[in-house]
Length: 212
Image 1: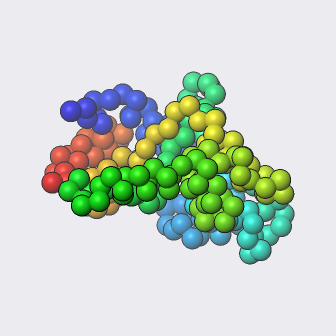
Image 2: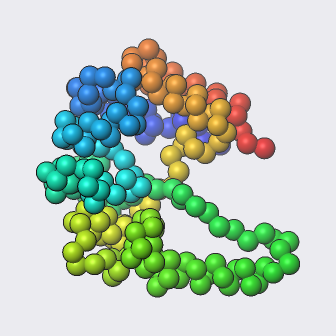
């Protein structure tokens, strides 16, 4: 099994992240701020960027968002380390999952229903037209001409994606592993442990918290 500590790319990524912190790219109170505080800073126009997912797209249409902020929201890709184009790479995970039980009495019918439900002309079309959510399917054809530019940019980003990564590693195992990962991240970013120690301890937590 591949380990974090034995994969140079993870150490490089961690050090690059800490470099951003040490450069002062985040607010001074970043270590104590929760999600709501970070979002509020962005909505007040006090932070230039907000690292978040498509579940917060409603900010661009909400009347609670100041018009100046609302009219100037843009989607930007995280820059790549080597300077190559990173605009076609996405990271995402499902908010809702539907499955058919292997021993279901109506397996064929249930499977047919899900195939119809997630048909490109059904689920993404309804999700966008009814403002239910942002589907991880192409939905550019269903966006109204007067829709916010941010929504159009998200549609373009998803529609043109060439590489899609699934769950961040912290969501892969148990809730204990997730919390320990977050704690280790904080220790590392605060300079309490090195990148090598960070990944070594992450490997130890992963081994101890496998989901049966």
